[in-house]
Each structure stands twice: as structure tokens, then as C-alpha cells.
Length: 242
Image 1 (cartoon, rainbow, N blue to C red):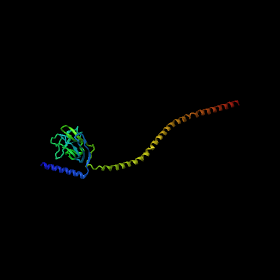
Image 2: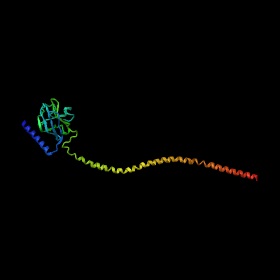
Image 3: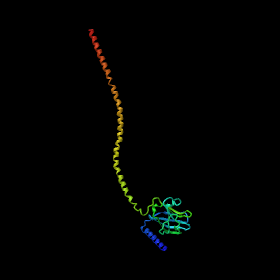
Image 4: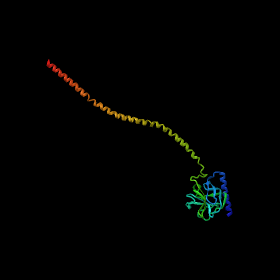
């Protein structure tokens, strides 16, 4: 039975690898940072549930090492409940961090490793991957995933290219808006008109001296009357002499 299970798992891995090779849509996430025991490798996403580590190297000296992933924090500081052990070789069983039945990672040299995520995890959810020794709590090597990771399932990225044409149309619409701008220009022209209005206010005191000039003819009439009286008196005096 165990032999049949191993054969089935190998067949599954071969099918997954063949599918990835045919599709050619694997996305490279990054390279594992070497910290201890010559751990290294290139991490790819085959789909939203499958990772592949190409050219994986590890000297096999760790007593309790395995592939470990988490959706938050870092390998050194995280919540164990949000992590999972990715068993290699995968035999259809997923393991929590404290599960002692998880298989221990063996030595590898330029090996292609396929890692299957548990049902509650997707590649886009993962924050980091580590080759971790649980017994001594030592990180042998890790990769911090980019914040915005897009797998092959998110291949419809060119579609947002259509909205820029709408933006161009939107930019064409403000052009008629530039036409009312000259309409606003005559408005400042009304401001000097307002200044002229202030000048008209200044013109009002000019009418005041014109009002003062009206009593001036009254003394003129007085002189005319006085002259007429003098002429009458002289006429009377002349008549009395006669």
C-alpha cells in the first residue's frame, strides 16, 4: 500500500510538472536567501495552490527541518496558527506546525521540489517561505514574498489598458471648458468699470460748488437794485432843483 501511494504521488508530481512545462506560465517569486546549511533555490508559483523550488540545495544536517510557510509576520516572529508545513515529498497529507508526523527534509542538490499548499491557503496569501528547523527554532533560509504577487491565474492584466482611452476622451471634454474661460476674462474687465464707478462718486462733490454758485447772482441783483435806487434819487434831486 505504501509503495502504491508513493507511485501515485510521484505520478501526481510528474503531471503537475508537465502541466507547468506545457503552460509555461509559472511566475518566479524570488530566490531563497541562504542563512545556514547551504540552503538555496529559486521559488516559482505554478498556480494559486502550487509552488516549485528549482535548483534546491540543502546539506541535510538539520535534525528537524522542513519547508514552512506563513501568511503574516516573518519566520522568526509569527502566529503558528497561520502557518503550515509543506511536506516534501508530498503524500497527500498536510501538517500543522506542531505535528510531529511531518516528514523531515533530506539533503538535496539542484533538486526540483514541488510544494502543495493546504486548502485554506493560496499563493497570493503567503507572506514568506522558510527552510526551518523546529527543534532549535533556526531559519536555514527564507524568501519574503512580494506584497502584490500575481500568479498565472491573474493573466487578465492587459484589460485595464482600455480605460486610458476613456481618460483621453475625458481630457478632450475640458477643451470646451476652456471656451468659457474668455467669458470669465471680461469679468475682470468689469473691475475697472467698478473703479470708474468710484470715480463717478468722486464727481458728485464737483456738483456742490455749482450749488454754491447759485447765491452768487443774488448779490449781483442787489447791486442792480442799489444802482436803480441811486438813479431814482438823483432824478428826484434834479427835479427838485428845477
